[in-house]
Length: 245
Image 1: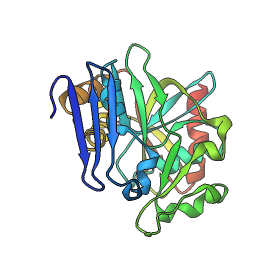
Image 2 (image 1 turned 90 degrees about the vertical axis):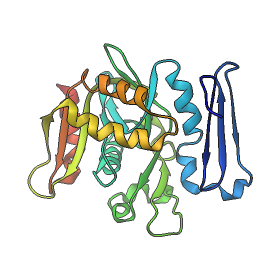
Image 3 (image 1 turned 30 degrees about the vertical axis):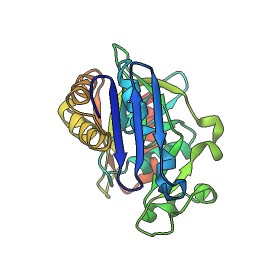
Image 4 (image 1 turned 90 degrees about the horizontal axis):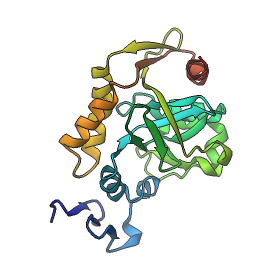
């Protein structure tokens, strides 16, 4: 049921059916039983449909977070699960930076790349929840300890939700555990390996075109590894200093 006009996907976890008709510019999302929709789906509703639709206008949904400063642009936070992406984005949110997303955002390509906010949700591993006492009341717990907790930043800091901003850099968090938290420049190839696979594997229908678009994007902005040391709370200060240059 997939061709140039019609895009479809089925989520086997609850048999959610997504369809986009690109000729009529109409979409359908159907579930047999709303009670079976997993709690985490509310963090990024209609993700497949938005991904297909955005791609038609030269934008790409990516698995990444984004934080910034008014008038200074922002950075894209990317990385595999456990890299520190969510912790870094929420530390920045709590420290007063603008928040465009934690898990999925939309990239607009060009000479001056721009990130658009889609969802104001964030997810945290159980081991990291205790680091954010200010967010505890807003967290939704799934009941199973191995699942991530979910929260919506607009419920706590509505004034810090950004619609988007120019992308100044790609930052790839990595927990080293000792020493100072610092930025180290890395290659566009490393940025591509950190951003493209998780994006493509999580979005039905994403393939060569998505990979090539992301490959072009990582060459247009500098790429940095954010080595998170024992002074982990310094993450917002390091990013704020970078954006203030």
